[in-house]
Image 1 (tube, each protein chain N blue to C red):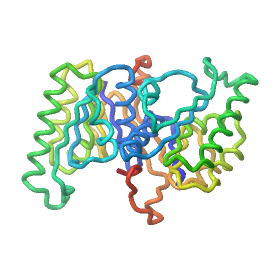
Image 2 (image 1 turned 90 degrees about the vertical axis):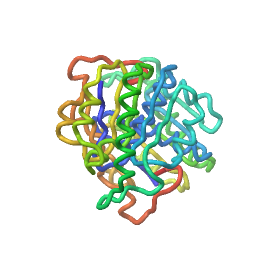
Image 3 (image 1 turned 180 degrees about the vertical axis):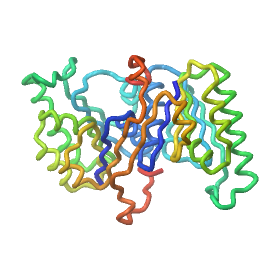
Length: 167
Length: 167
């Protein structure tokens, strides 16, 4: 099954992480691949201690500049794609999370065809793809789609991102 | 801050669990209170091993019968309310999750006034309340609201709930 968590609201990455915890709690194996992230968020600091989860981050220390992505940004997205393909084909995971892939595709760091290719691979693993702006083709092909919709956010009140809550 | 995760889509409880992991990863303390749940879902099996998170479940082994809730269902909801109040007043947590409280209120196991009372308590903790059908008063008072909206779900294709994914 392929699940998509998209939308402009809070909870896409955390829902994927929560699913990882549920899977780990059942003694199953998880692979977490993150695009455009190269930083130890709270969840990574915690999860890196467990042998049943493999974590791979692709991206630079700086956040991608949407207007002028660098050659490295494209290369990292391609590496993430290859790693995901290998992870799916290895058949060793029960859950594979590809965090922010929807955003990487919407920013054209990765062609949508490659995301669709990943969705078509034969696997028994649950595949979760997160990020805003999932493309129509991806939504059409997915088995499950949840839109995390922002109804109200404290960022609008000027509250900055807080360690342990937003990252 | 009080965050609400509501809506008919997947990802409300898992987003709260993911936030718990982010908080734990920063070395902070979490309290997870679950209403109408008395079963070791995957996330509980995993999280119960860590000293920085306290978990309390309120409910019976059987799921609440919406049409004829028992006296015990009401008593358990009241106990969950008291425990939450104590947890908030103890000032010892950085994140307090009250899982399914929106549902308990919508089913009238708990009066909405008690949920609002919890939201008004003075605290530095982040408060997360999950469950479908959050009431209008609760949404109005919250600092953040995400609606997890079901766009497409494999349950509609007849796929049953799976261990490690749905529970």
